[in-house]
Length: 279
Image 1: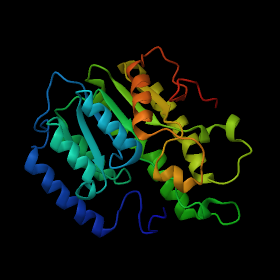
Image 2 (image 1 turned 90 degrees about the vertical axis):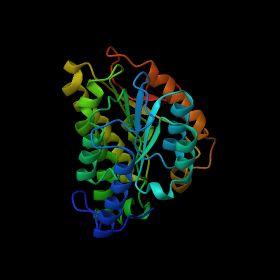
Image 3 (image 1 turned 135 degrees about the horizontal axis):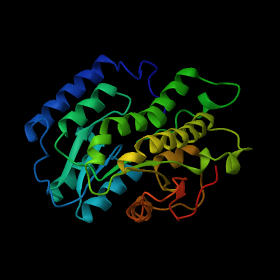
């Protein structure tokens, strides 16, 4: 789970820049900059999901594709996202885009590439647990802290900022960020370990509340939804061994909550079972 120390929010390694350039060429072969991806239906709603190559993100991509949506599924390395490629082969309105949410230039480039696309629902799913030892009291690792905050906090905020006009121009106008009960002071105030992850979830809760206030006048709904305990690699790495939902079950539950969101909702974090998560 440890990301190389060389990764930085603004300047990714040269190898990552080269990879992004190659993937950007692949994008241009299927869609002109500013145009809707091939196969998209203007009469269907569109969802953009970050971190879609596995786990919850993949479950969400499958759910919305099967439900007839235009789907933009992002992954850091689409060439290795075999299950996403299978979905793209099965659904004409399914598009895969290269995206690392710590690469701010790439976020803006993707927003420019999708300039003609209205996005009904933006789902900020991409997230990391981080190295557990490096966020344990007594062995705090500052580079791990920077990376975890970059992915889990600034990444979703940067996505909301870059795609706000796409969302505001849509019918549904929803920005949804995945949160967790681990960000709750009420529930986890005495818990030890996973310090950076817990801070990041508390931080993104506040960040999205601020963005919600900024976008309220445009009718954009900004919501926080927790997927629950889900059978993913992240959950396995956390050491949890209790009962968990499948990615498909979690995706279906969250999609139901997202479908019911309105501007009148108070914006407090909601668990996949519909219960409010206390702050």
